[in-house]
Picture: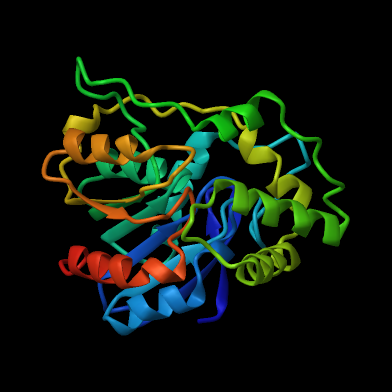
Amino acid sequence: MAERMLPVGDATLCAETFGAAADPAILLIGGAAGSMDFWDPDFCTALAEAGRHVIRYDHRDTGRSTNYPVGKPGYTGADLTTDALGVVDALGIARVHLVGVSMGGGISQELGIRYPDRVASLTLIDTSAALPRPEGAEPLPPPVERIQALFAAPPAPPDWTDRAAAIDRVVADLATYGGSVTLSPAEARALVTRAYDRTTDFAASQTNHWIVADGNLPVAGGMADIAVPTLVLHGTEDPMFPLPHGEALARDIPGARLVPLPGVGHEHPPRPVWPIVLPAIIAHTAGQ
């Protein structure tokens, strides 16, 4: 389970694997500004013990992966998408199950439609449509009022080099986006502390993903063209993408199945819902 530095395109990405390499592979893809620390090692180990080869990794500008000057990301959103497949390539894996949360769910959709020969399945967590929806599809609701207010008048960023202030800010952000079933304050602080201490430039990690250009990945189809098996896990209290976003994913993607996560917000699945999440992912990823 040691971390590995992998050459991926013009970057070096840090990854960690769990379980036997011969088992069906699961790539965990995190959200914007999130290092691989947000995928709990116990969560990864539980999947590995169920017979899965689990990979988590740091996006560019997070954790120990290549970082760029604050405000000047030397990559695009398209690069973040292709990086995920690059991690799989660097590990010599031909076919992989993708499990993505938030931005990671969007990346998963893009890869699923572009590389159906490489993607065995999709698990989309607390995310929304990243591809054109069917004509006449019902509009999706905006973020809840507290998130809209945050976008309209964002608080000034802390001094990200001030360890205590930076950790306090991200812990507060997690609480803002979390639901009634979420990390405890102690769990949140331990998680953010680990992420801060592993990250080369925390200011870049909290800045650059939000300003990156989309890049050039031509549209390869719409939601209805996703042909790989898809599981949708969505918090019933997600304030960023309210539950109708998850319901729409399950409607728009042929054969997709929705599993609501009671009380969960916009976040990686917290431990209290692992008894729902883990069996669902294990069953969904049973095929190679």
